[in-house]
Image (cartoon, one colour):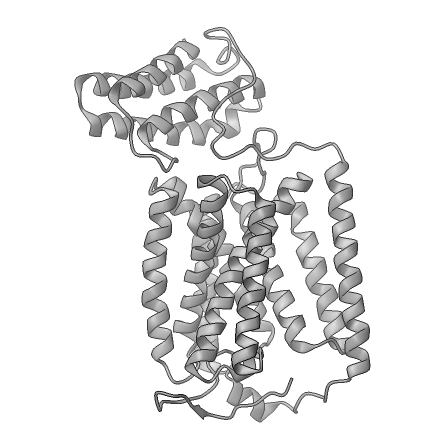
Length: 424
């Protein structure tokens, strides 16, 4: 791959410089930060704010169209609009995969296969039209359009692949970080040996998505969770998103001031890349194949080990049946009373026709239940899991943390009555 800073005029007559930053260490740092935001910010808006998966996807699709339009109008690479587009694409691509998995119940192996095929099609069309897949020559509107389409598909593919890995292995997010991190390190070593730079770049680019997502899950997940659910440092999705957005902003400001990742600036301070060695490229390609086989073998082995897989997102049933009051027997009465008070308020408002009040009380009930998880679940995991399943049934009737619209007051009353019976 030859690095070039040549400006080109595309069919509209606009003169463009390369629209993608130089691939330095800053590129990979900020890319991983963006993928973490894609995971945590999407979860925060969808679940914590109760916007819903489909509505969140529509919102970010619209935002994506706007920011991409602004990015395409520029004649050169500018850090802020470029990385803003990457952040929005990371959230949007994550949401598309989540809709397939959680909303349409498409198995993750199918999503992974479909997005892999789609990525191959995009690469094929890009190559047939432009005869290059290099990001150092993204200097025409068609090439930039192919580039952003590829980035969107890689985020969706990385999400599906990462989630499928967790489903197969039952690994915690903290442990799962090691697999993409190790693969990226191996790709970097093979690149230094002489692997094809374009292939190495896109392989690493795809792998940064599960790496960043696992980091986000590890930071945001509670320290104690029910079997099959991720555990982590309990920072929460909002705090995690805020931290990483701040780091992205700081990095973008640094790059804007220094211009160290602008291709023209980079070319002026660095020597040209060494000419490719076809023999070494073939050896590295064989190593990539071996690496893929070894990764597949590791996943098969991990899947065969005893582990608890993640529960489906729409699974709101409990395999445990407890007598009324049994689930809260080991919980502090003050905490149980607070939960019952909110459930009773929601029930009262639902009966009186105050839909807004019932919804607000149910939301407060959810927030209090989540806040008490760390203290209640260790006291009686069975009781907590049993109540959590019924709590989810209540939230579903209000459309909280679920994509469905609020159900009828009669359905809300029925589930609230069941919950209050379980807590009496």
